[in-house]
Length: 402
Image (cartoon, rainbow, N blue to C red; front, side):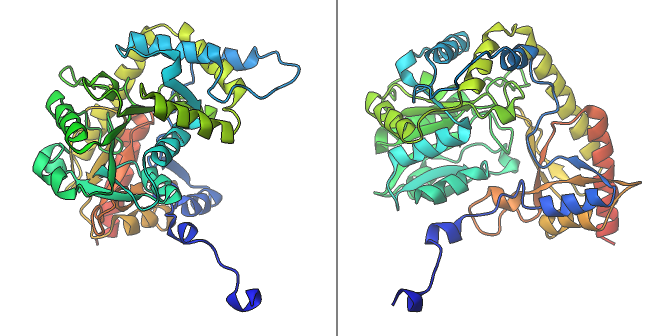
C-alpha cells in the first residue's frame, strides 16, 4: 500500500520559495568560472570590516570544553544588550530578551508564537523576502498591503488595513528602517500601527536590525517597544549582523515585555538547546566599541547612497526613491522583466571582464505581478565600486534593450 502511494515531500516543502537574493547564484558562479568579476549588489553583505573589538573577542576565547549555554543566551551577553538598548532609548530588562541564532530565528520564533497554521500576518510590501520563507515554514499566510515609491513607500490608510483584517489576522509585521525600501516610518505611521494593534487585538512584530543606519536629519526610527499602551503585544526582532558587519556571527534576539510570550520564546529556545556560545562571547565585546564607530559607518553609507543615486539618475528610464535608512533601494528599470535582465548581466554580458549581480524585486512582493520590472540594490560596496556597477548596469541596459 505504501509503495503504491509513493514517496512525497510535504506541501510546505513544495511551497518554500527560492530566495531572489541568492537564486541567481549559479549564474554568478558560472560568470566567475569564466574569469569575470562580479559586483554583488544583490545581498546585504557589507564590506566594512567587523570591529576589532569583536574580532579580538573571538581570538581571546579560552575554553577547554565548549559546553551548552543557557537556552535564553549567556547572561553576560544579555546584559550587554540591555545596556545597548538603554543607550538607544529603549528601556528593557534582562527577562525581556532571548538570544537567538541570528535575526532569522527570532522572526521564525515570533511567527510560531503568535500564529497557528492558517492564521494571517499583514506585512507592508515590498518586504524582506525571507519573511515569506519563514511564513511558509510556520504555516502562516502573509497578507500583503502594498506600498509604493510614488508615495514614499508610506503606509496605506487605516481603512486599507482594516479591509484586510479577518478573524484569522494575528499580527502586523514590518521592518523599520525598511528592507528593501529604505523607508523610515514617521511618528504618525507608528501611531497608526499602535491604533490597529489595540483596536483589533493584534501583535506588532518590528524588525529593527537597521536602527543605526538612518541618514536624514528628520528621519528618526521609533522602536515598537517605545509605543505606549501596547507593551503586551509589541515584539522586536534584532541582530548584530548588519549593525557590526558581522553577518556570519549568527547572533540575534527577540525582545518583548509580554511575560507569556517570552515564556514561549524560552521553550522554543530550549527545543533548539542554545544559541552559539563563542559568537555571544565575541558579540558582548561590542560594549567596548566607541559611539564614533556608528558615526563613521553612517557617514560611509550616506556617501555610498548619495553616490549611487547620482549615478542611477544618469541612466535613462531608471526610477527610484532615495532611501532614508538601511542600505537598500528598490529600483525600477526600463525593462519588461527585471529577472531576465539580471540573468542577462551574469550570463551574456560583461564590460571589460566585469558585471553586476542584482536581486529581482518580484521576490520581495507577495502580490503576483508586482516588482516585475524592479530590482533591489544593496549599496554595501565602496563608492568607486558603486560607480563602476552603475556604469555596467547602464551599458547592460543599452545592449539588452536593442
